[in-house]
Image (cartoon, rainbow, N blue to C red; front, side):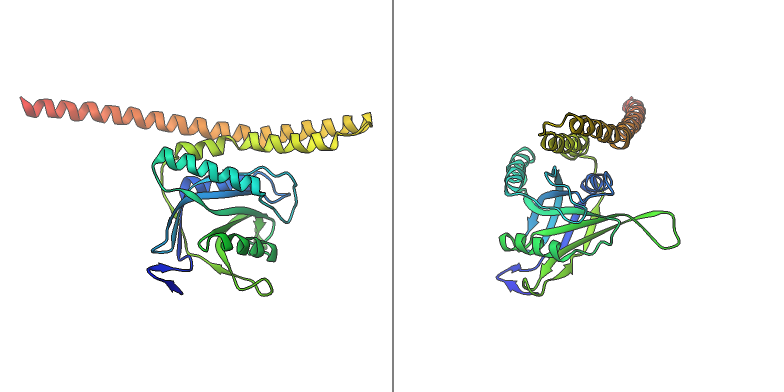
Length: 266
């Protein structure tokens, strides 16, 4: 590894908070037809060339494609502003330090387009990292889908780019408020994508085309509600019940300890 003063030039380790992993994976699982994307926020330890991912931003897609995604400069600017606000709130030196996207039905390996995109980001920051979630792929002879995750950077030049895999550790943590908000906002983002596309294709004088497009929009919105919103509500209700039960147990334990202290003090 090339050294620059006391700093390592290449990223050595990435630590991904478990709640961020959950948010990114849930986003990846929302569709098996197109790739989805988002940006990663956290702290960079430049002395040890390590990234600590603590939050994510789920981006809406203006152009849905089955084999590629793009992040606009406007979205990157909005993510930077969000990172600054979150840094002030948490009193941590946070920044946009990576991106993620999905590979539905294909391997986790980054494509040449992925490597070129990653290489471009690394010209801005040499420690910028990429994550790819492979979803809805299945092993031969198995009916079960599998999920794979790769953490990578790009090496080489435009004519000969290749990936460099980075060791990734998923760190257990509580479900933080900012990541819970990202998860619960996912249905709104998906709905906005549907409405944006519907508004674009409905710019026609053909009434039958409008009727067809409106029916398709309703079908897509219903699918989002049934496959994303309702399961999310069920999950959050289960989590609320679990947390409530745990609070009751802790309150009971507190009362028992308090009674023991009172007996000892007599």
